[in-house]
Length: 139
Image (cartoon, rainbow, N blue to C red; front, side):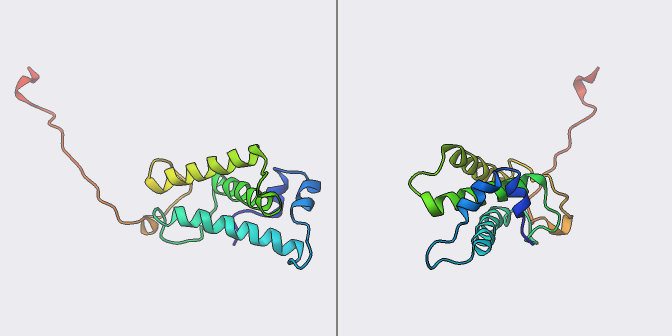
């Protein structure tokens, strides 16, 4: 299951712009395949960062932040396909923000806002300490 769909992408760009981005050039695959491939590549990038946090990928319940990253990365990929020297700055920034967020998620500095079962979490070291409630200096 893809993390984003054509509808998610159309929430971010106009249909006319999407049509230009997925236009079939000579000898290239069908435009629907171009969009599917861009979303698939975006999802693979996302899974690469999430694999250190979640065992079972792809996610079955996709949080809004992951949908947003998938759509934004896919749009960046589509832009770079036809104008790799001149990707609009806005989409470069959105791509960079998504990658930065995914790096933070992979390091445990940010949460993906998804319900993750305990069985789904990677094993990690947990440390606990007891604080003294009563001590000599209490009274």
